[in-house]
Image (cartoon, rainbow, N blue to C red; front, side, top):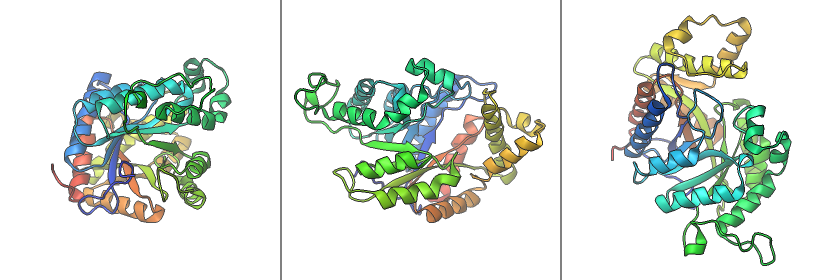
Length: 353
């Protein structure tokens, strides 16, 4: 349970963590983005953030996090203490045995520091999901999610019953090699399905508030009302992902978050690409429909000066009752993102270690 529950540092009301999408800005490369990811993880560790997670996405030129396990292995080699995990791995895209092997390997690299967050969405468009899953049916993976989760758990625990077709198959590295802690499983979601399943299984739950804010409180209420204590948790534990960006100047913060909003406009209209520059976003001629989307999107992005961001995060934690806030900073350049996490840490008085 200690691997799940964090302790708030400094004057933060709840533990603060980092969700990194390894975004690629126009004029930069994936190599630049992944180097920034290492810098963010190291900064998060030295500034008292609790976890660092990466999320699986595919066929998005502006997001370099298509292979969470690969990124996390590299991050593990450049950090010592911070918890590392997936926020998340999209389980229907992979064979459960493969995920058990990947995260068993990560656990061997970084014992006691690895989280396995799982989602049931494809993390991409339908055609790319079909290429990943080798099937045209997206419902097949989503509908089978509870069964896939049960199979993955069996592989992680190495406890298929006698007579099961997989009883003699072992996920290596794993318990077959001797006593070892396995990565705790988290369920991720943006609706009620994963909230209810996490509650039923007594697992920690991470909700994607950063892109489904209207569903946050209903999903968290459902999770808490339906929760059943388990060997993992004796009480519900809910983390929410939140988009937040702090800058020394309020206007600069607005310029930076507008790049993420324009990127989302393009993604939602089938035109994914690199994250635009602040100048490009400022000069873009939004249609009335696009402007309505941007206004709605930015309404859920906490941005401004460090004090304004702290106030927004504190209010969100109070309104939702979240046990942990996981911050994603979407901006064009790595420097802006690094500066944002530094300013947020300073605003909360998080320690330097």
